[in-house]
Image (cartoon, rainbow, N blue to C red; front, side, top):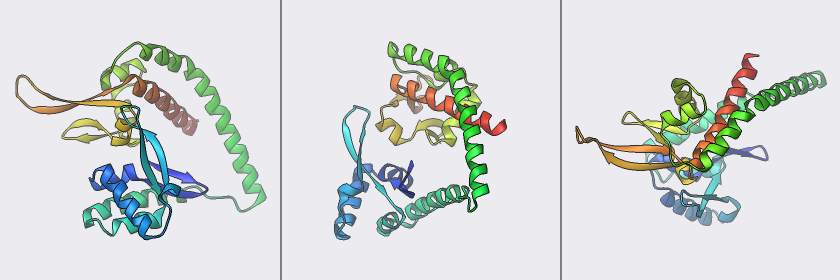
Length: 231
């Protein structure tokens, strides 16, 4: 997940760990050592998130230069994975052009106001469904992908594409697997299992009540954004 703070795009240590295939604890260790070597305060790059057990854990947000510096100690495959991700971030940032004239700024403001109004109307329409999910998940346990899709009224293909495109889940051996930051955030639980008939080992990812609540809101916002573009 990338963050934009004061106009500066950063990459989290959690995403760096995913892209490089390293343990997050090892990436944090490498970042701390690098920042110490650079005579920079690690705490100025740090932030706190909650893991699956609701415990406070430390992570980092690195700007481009510090990310590249960190990668010099990693292998070529890991470096290339992160470089490709930065290219995606740069492309998405370049897609937004800042107006250079008063008329352009006024047009942009009017378009944004209209888009905000449309999104507010659509979010209001989606509010009863989201509130239903809020009430439903309070007293229920974990749920499968198909159960959650049915619960929020989403077509499975559309819901699957949303989860993949938004980097909530990814395919691993043909199975939908959550990205580690969403496991750390307590939105999924992943349990190992074995098929009785074939003996094939597999990992079963299930949404927690917290995850259902979160993904219902995110999917509703995603639908609002799509409708606004189509309007």
